[in-house]
Image (cartoon, rainbow, N blue to C red; front, side, top):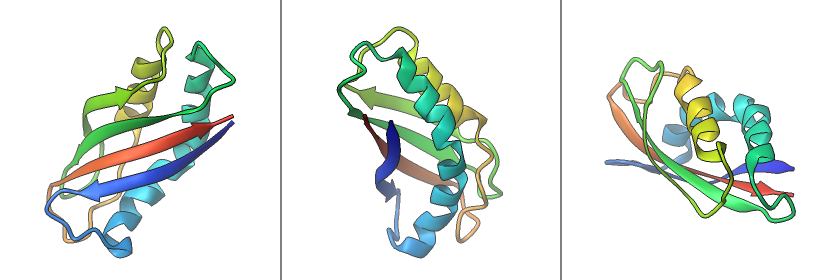
Length: 109
């Protein structure tokens, strides 16, 4: 099972690599935890995508997680992934302002 980031949008921009870097560096160490959530998906042979919105304080820290979206089915899968995102200590966003991030990952068997 592979987990990778497939998209990120920074609310209010810019959407350049330097602005996205703190979010990628914060989430990527948690890919193993996200992989474990995939064990709750009904059809283990199919992959799929998961998106979530993250509101990160200007100082960093835990994000407010909202609007989880996925077509993957399975008892406890969505709460598991949301829980991983809620536990992440995010790095300070570039510019030090409260930032809304739309973050998407892909699970590939």
